Length: 520
Image 1 (cartoon, rainbow, N blue to C red):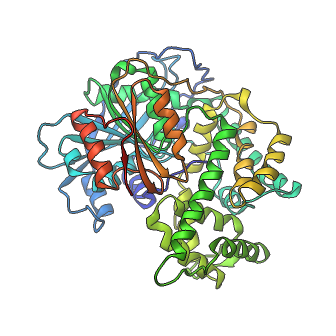
Image 2: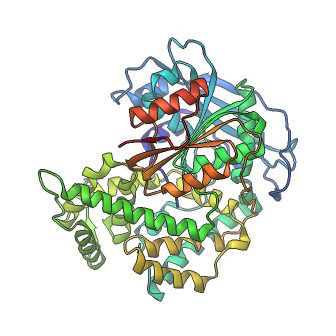
Image 3: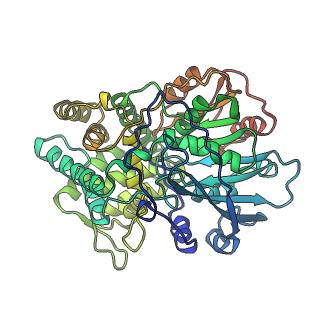
């Protein structure tokens, strides 16, 4: 999975504050969704977006956060999109949006549509957070609009994996190499797939990226913009580049930050992820050992983690948090590590959390792991995991699925080559082999005829390594690559150099010179 931690608390509060969430049980589900890669975009008429003032609900969620002093107002919106673009006049599903506006806008350009990644992360949630952090120069010219893609959060959420099964999946062996370990992981995967197939049937195929890209064009029209201005992170780069392929003449500006490699098949993508996280852990370890106050993990953080995994494997580690009955298994520990590698700001918490776990308290590690997978304090989950799998598998070409024996062989191989993350990455390849849904494979993307597109890559990104951004920029006919020599996942808005280049592009459509690199 390629997931991005988000404002889980904010999303949870929005779920309570905003009524009218609709699922397939509330509307007419399609019997099938056989959209194909070659079918041209349908042209249904865009429905109006109904906006309501939800400032009173959102402002308490952001109070006290950096940027909360900005004079922002928030609106919540709803609109309808076709469930199947093969039947554009047929049954519809609701899409939920949040719009943030900065007081005192001048020379407004339009709306900046946002997707934070995942797949499965809430764009409405991201709009709340990014309204506090994006440069004010951009917010003075654009409304910031985040939407929950179909199947996500408040937009017809796909919900078919029970919370207790999610807990078991997270706690499972993270480095499965033996036949017994792989059997256990595959059994959990099959249980999740069976439950979703029983719950949704053929409707699982409606949650594809291609369908969401078509939804985005209806949102563009509903927002009153002649062309799309879009900011996509991680999986959001896949969504944005798919939009550009389907609607190249409707692109005003696309910022594709932390690009997913469009040329990598699922095996290559999984291996790149394993290698990226290994490099990310090495960067974390080097940073820790160079601390003036000393690294709480000692001089060999990798060895410390291996010892901690063995300790938790022998006896799961309890948490000191009041009322917490869970104990940290190796799966929880590795999930916490992955979560922290997304951002250097989480590295101190990870180091202290690993050290505390070795002393018998896993509280900090549970905090990281729960944020990563959308687990709330009451033990319930957002639908992040359900949506992540449903969207990922709806996009997969079934002809590229690997046989089970090949996955087992890769787990053994990658477990040696990428000791912390390789076996788990290999085992994840089993997920879509048992997922029963119609597939809409992603189109090849060159976006011929599109306006200039800005691809942003980070040399130290453990989640979407830099070669993916290089490939995406090469594939898109009009793309220019901006490289940041930094650590962590995504680059904008983290440094003045990156901010200046992206702001100039979004506002004035000025692209940086080919080969521009920003220092750390």
